[in-house]
Length: 162
Image 1 (tube, rainbow, N blue to C red):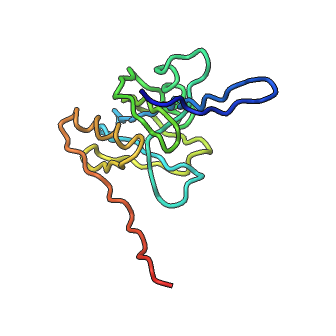
Image 2 (image 1 turned 30 degrees about the vertical axis):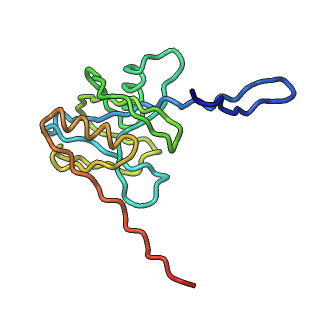
């Protein structure tokens, strides 16, 4: 049995900060009017050229399916059809639990200001990343009969003696 975990507790009122993982919704958006290409986007706050799934948080009172439909609409201007659960994934580095969906969408893509750009990829051209939503993408590709291809981590600079 594991030892009890230490928690942050307010000495004045006794309130406990549990630090439970935050659920995050993620969408694999398949564009049905663009030969089934998958939309990946780059967050405006990110440096470099990393493109990823559309993600966001649930609002109080909505289901996960409603939340992913709202997030996709807010961030891309696209309405989705029939969200289907891909899986639930651990993302401990960010203390998150990712709930990933596949959604079909069509129409004009209009990015929100939080996204800088998007790219469309044929499913067989996608490259998965070994963190968070990358595992969801790999699982979805596998269900389509596509062997996931993995991005190699960037090379670390060699250490030099001082």
